[in-house]
Image (tube, rainbow, N blue to C red):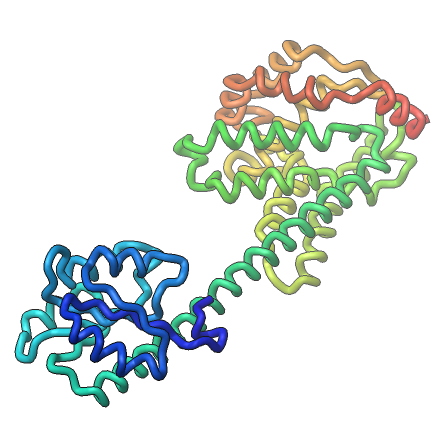
Length: 378
């Protein structure tokens, strides 16, 4: 914020190596403005670069040492001083000086010998222009800060909403526990590995990878709509029960779609969440559900989640089965390359299988988690 915007007198810096000129201009301006003076370019740059910088500079062109052009060039090169308007003081008829000064960023010029009314008018005009520019700049800075603050609020609300929904699903499903967190990190690892792959680079840009990580926890949100008698059944499901279980993909997609419809705008992370919820049970060869899509008809997000979800299901202990080893899970997924899973996604999985194992160990279910699951499935 500049002093003039706070009601203080604007400050004018006069730079001229001739004492008479300094005195004449200072006497003219000091009635209205705070006046500072410098007899050479070095002193002028020192004053302009201070915390109490001037609001406008009257700058003589011809000076020993640093010329006015040199001073102006340095002023415009520094963020702290580049917005200070500079009016050049030139000898009458020096057209070349005037043009050069304007090219360097000066806002105006005043010819010597000076005409006092002209000096006062031009100084006043340019200070008003600067005050308006400073006001707009301050407003823009405030708006940028406000936008950044509100953007962070929106992101925080999204994150809390996702975690709340995922936690709600977790309370109903005896297969979740840390499954949600592990699959989130698996998907992130796959996306990072595939980001430069020719088939995936266009769809796995930095923003999409970030949104994938945010939306992955919602992949099984539709299980909230599955009856407890099926969702918590400790043994193998009957064909009829499995048909009901399969509807969790559609239930999840539709619930997220209704939420988006109520917002009235498309939300990128919800688009990915819908893709994952609806498509993560599809298979590369077309034998999955709910639509039996095949190959590239299945969204990339869902193909990544398919590998992540199956790997975690294989290694995880359930109330009705023990988990298998990491090595056996890797072998089974490798066997499904080109059948259940996108071949390139499986290749990425094989390349980073140690990362998957590390994630599984980092977010392993505790004995307390397993006992809680067992009690819900009892």
